[in-house]
Length: 539
Image (cartoon, rainbow, N blue to C red):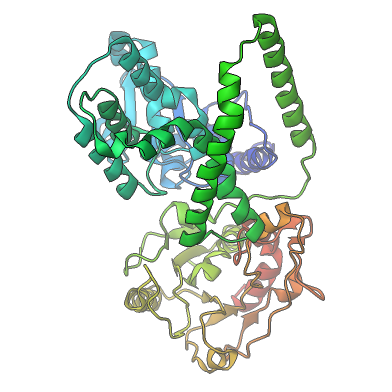
């Protein structure tokens, strides 16, 4: 740590915890006061994604002060910094054990506005520590990493508990239709953004419980086909996952609706076969207790050995596929909406000099590199990016959720704001495959204000992380160069390609999906892009 330089020391700690997290390990930080929380949590969030981690803070004081004796950095301010900078969401930040004379009313009001939840010692004493911790865990894991939540027993215990209650207390009621309605409704309204398991899971679970306790028979559930599906249900549960996940990995694309139906029919066929030839015969067999015990131990050792072997084969390539932080904090806009956000300011936010970033997601992919440069050089960085909305006035068309009119309105607002803030330089970025010819791209007029146009990165047009796991050829051809009208252009192609454009560049995964470079690659190219920026702004 740099002695006597608090800010530099925190930067070293942030980089260290980020490096540890990227290596797949868990950082344990001992020593120091709460000032260091702003750095070690930031480093972890830089890897997992801003706003994608939950935090629980045990302390007598909230440490959410706006400043401490005139200083913005200190042991009384780190938690506010983490929330203000977007590393942790306020509603995923819990305080346990608050007591004493602080925080004051103004700070408490700020905490409330962020959605923070605080458990004061009086509440913990009254309710009991276990009840508070159980509630805290449920709050922090609701909407967290889906894999963790799905396989975590505490987040799913209520499902098992409800089933056990139905066995212990055989309640009977005529609720079959409400139960069917609840399950049907869940199948239509749940999507990839639904925090599941979580509170929404109660809808289908209570629906299933309502069906199980129903007295009357119903043709929908009691016909011969439904009964057979019920017999095969466990086999269907085992077969459906590989049949729906392995084909997309092999094909390197999502399955179409017809293909999903075919996969479902194959799943039911295999389930019927395995039910009759495997599941039923095993169920009817009788094994000595000693054999079952030895088999369980052997199976556990086999799984543990397999997991250890897989973990031991980790390579040093950075395979992180997180998106730039402006996705998590809402500064990069998706298809919906047509208005810019004026509060998306990064870099040295107190600086008098500024640059701006304008364009679509292929402009947003350069945010990590630009943020590094802006912090190092003392510039504010304004961002105006929206998915499928190019910086240049390239003709775009409605496509599903994307509406061209929203893009035009967003870009016009961004240009008006750029005219108002007058940055020293505007960085432009565009996807170069919007369905128009290269000649049409070249005809598009640029802007009169001083700007740097970044040429598009190569377009693999297939998911590179998936491609690499399948041991296939994953390199991409060098793209054709468009003769833009802009006077200043940054071309990343020589940095990413030689005679071809490989999936791995300098030991780093080059692409996070089928079209965008990774955050790590953007940061890796920050030096080259920064040199170009240095040549364009006044010293």
